[in-house]
Image 1 (cartoon, one colour):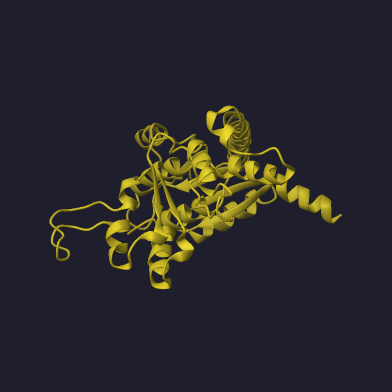
Image 2: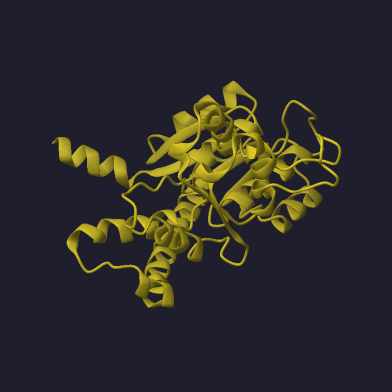
Length: 281
């Protein structure tokens, strides 16, 4: 009985919904849960982006108008672009009470899979969401298979010793995590291939065409820590004769490998953690 329930939960579609109206969120939750969806709710674009950064969803349903304005759809269109950037396979359905052909065309142009006007028709909305969620799962499965084949066939794979049963979960984890935008902590003894794993992750990621910057964080003098990682502007301190980008900026849109972070003083670890978690410096 417990196993059957667990499997049924796994098979439910995961949907992320963003709308600034509590009544709309309640109505959608009551409609979609019995239809086989696990629902995550957000009241703003920022909340939805935080959900998508943490978890993988099969479909997203977003309002086009939030508290900043009520008619233009600008906030929703901007959210649509950001969602597409975060997860190119995530199908996004947009909805608004202020529907128009112009807004619908613009939403589709920016990557929306469909357009729904409030008040929606229940059966039609469920059909649209289920169709897009099924397509998303198929595309993700195909991407995972392709990623696995590319990893196994690439020249880099020859450098990953993966004959033993103990290494198979490592390869599988690389295959799952590599295509995502997740931060990754790689642990292991000296000489076990942590940097090889990092380069494999970079090679199968959407950032593969961008630079991979490697930094031995433990070897950076404490006085130069912020300048080396976050950069500085001319005149920031004595001897700063020109602007200098830090390693985070050099790795923008690429991959940053921070080696030996355990050797950093705690104060520097706190600064580093904030930058990694927030994506800002």
